[in-house]
Amino acid sequence: MIMAIDRGRFLGLCTAAPLAFAPALAHAQTIDELYQKARQEGALSLYTGGPAANYTGPLADFKAKYPGITVTVTGDFSNVIDRKVDTELAQNNVVCDIPILQTVQDFVRWNAAGALTSYKPAFFDAIGPEFREPSGAYFSQDVFLLAYSYNTTMVRPDDVPSSALDFLKPQFRGLAVTCYPHDDDATLYLFSTLVKKYGWSFMDRYMANDARFVQGHVAVSRDIAAGKSSVTFDASSHTSDRLRLGGQPIANAFSRDDLTPVFTTTAGIMKRAPHPNAAKLYTNWYLSPEQQARTGNWSPRNDLPPPPGLRPLNTYHLANAYREFVTDEANLIALRKRFLAYTGPVVNK
Image (cartoon, rainbow, N blue to C red; front, side, top):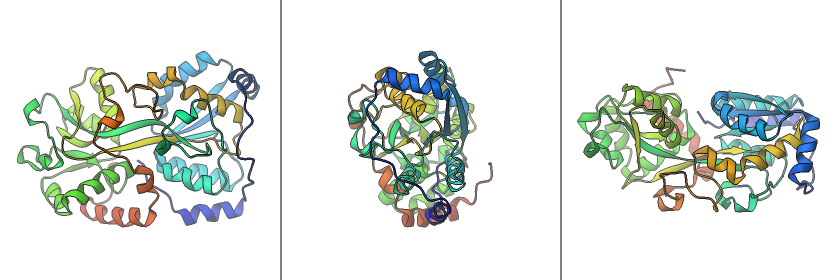
């Protein structure tokens, strides 16, 4: 779930605890030097959008490569974690070293307030410019597409939708599921591309077909795999693919007619991070070719191959202006209000 929080409220919090600005870039250090300093710190605190359990595998690899560093992960919806970070900043008691969230707009405003460290890890220049802040204050660490997914026992290959209009067919009445668009900004971005192309009558027709809504993209994919729904145009592709690889009856498809939205997880090091060297070590490790290959996601680096079985990002028909979309606050507020009128409030928190 990836909503922005009120910018005015955040600036008010910062007024109570002014932030000092540090030099733009950290001094260059080798990985071995960083590791020795990180071991002296002995800990790393990550705040993540999504379940902490998602990081169990990757962090086992990190701790195997760099023993002696205790890693703590705090997971929740991104629009819960960002408030936690704001409170720590306002109270001058920062516990988080690195927030890793889908709400890139939070990093934009934290950076504007001087709350992030400008640090360019190794491989930084290989990150596509649309996936990084030029000074190194934040960068995308994973890239995702919102794909179509379907239950392979309920939908024949010939019936897999090829455009959003196919989800309006009677055969999918009550069987199409997405996140609530007013509750999840990636989904909001997706729906905005559809109403821009097809007009608001698309929403009228979609709702008339008894569309279902759940909270979070994990729930979307699980609904499809469990047969509670049969189709979606709002699947986080990597989530559905992990269920497929686990033997569940779910598969992804990519539209031949509509734009496929791109969204990311963004990471940055807090300027007041209690373990700054461990944080820098982590960012270097996560961007390494070895770790990027393990994620199963597209990399923000433009010099690495796509995940197995998938094509390079630039070969898809993409909507790739997510950062611009979520930082247009007036438009976000208006769109959330209008979609809320269609779907009603979240009822399955």
